[in-house]
Length: 147
Image 1 (cartoon, rainbow, N blue to C red):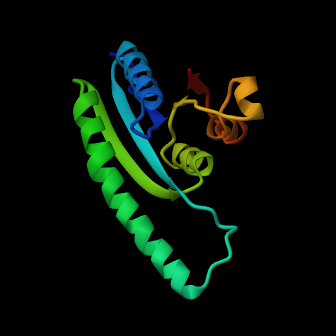
Image 2: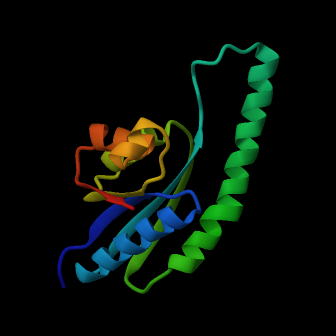
C-alpha cells in the first residue's frame, strides 16, 4: 500500500466545492487512502470600523454562523463523502478564506489543496475567483482549481 496522503478542500456546501471534494477523494483513493480536511470559512472583514456594541453583536453572529455551518454544512458533507480508507476531518473557522485554508494546509502539512471556483468581475474573465486566486498566491503546496 502506498503512503497515505492528506488533502484540504475549501468547502462551502455548494456544487463546486462538492466537486472539488469528490475529486480529492478520487485522487486519494488512487494513492491508497488518506485524510481529507474539509474547511468552511465564515468571512471576516477586519477593516470595518465598529463600536464595542457592534463588535459584540458581530461576535455573537459569527458564533451562530460557526454552529450553523458545522451542523448544516459539514455534518451532511462528512456523511455524503464518507468512504472506506478516507478519514474526513472538518474545520469551521472565521477569517479570510484564502488565508485560513493556506494556514491550515501549512499547519497540517497537507500534500495538496483542492478548491472550487466561483467568480465575478475581472477575475471571472480570467477564470478564477478571488479565493482561488488568493490560495494560488499563498499556497506552498500544489493547488487544484475545480471548475
